Each structure stands twice: as structure tokens, then as C-alpha cells.
Image (cartoon, rainbow, N blue to C red; front, side, top):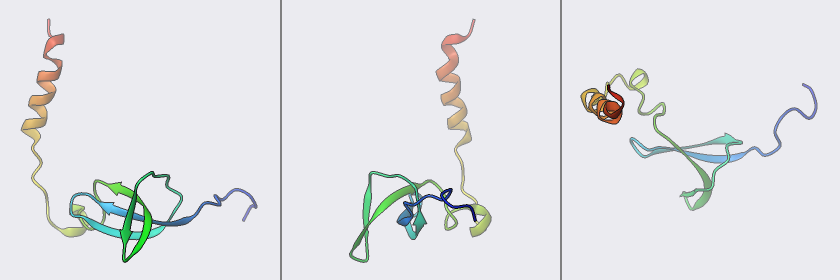
Length: 83
């Protein structure tokens, strides 16, 4: 390996899946201002929208997505640009 190309700030970081509150610890260089206490120890916290514990590919379960609501929001947002 080349010397000096790898980050020096590896540390244990908690990643939290916000859809199901699953927390897992791993080494990372991710910057964050938030912390979380896990088993009595405080770790930097990175929030995730989806992880291996909530992704439909890994869980075999699909989530119902409100696509109609998203389309309506888009139409309402850009209706003022209609001629």
C-alpha cells in the first residue's frame, strides 16, 4: 500500500436506520455532530434512511410507497409555471 493515502481518523461510529431504529456499530471516517449511547458508551451517530435491516431486497418485504401523494405534491409545486 502507498503510505499517506489512507485517512487517519478511523473510529467506531453508530449507524441508525431511522425506519426501524436498528443501530449497528462499525469503523468509519464519517463526519457527524450527533452522538448516541449504546451499551453505556457514547458513539458518533450517522442516521440512515434505509439499511440492510429495512431494504426490501434483504428483508423480502416491500413497503407501500405513496406515489400518488408525491405526484400531487409535484403538480401543486409547479402549477404556477403553467401557461
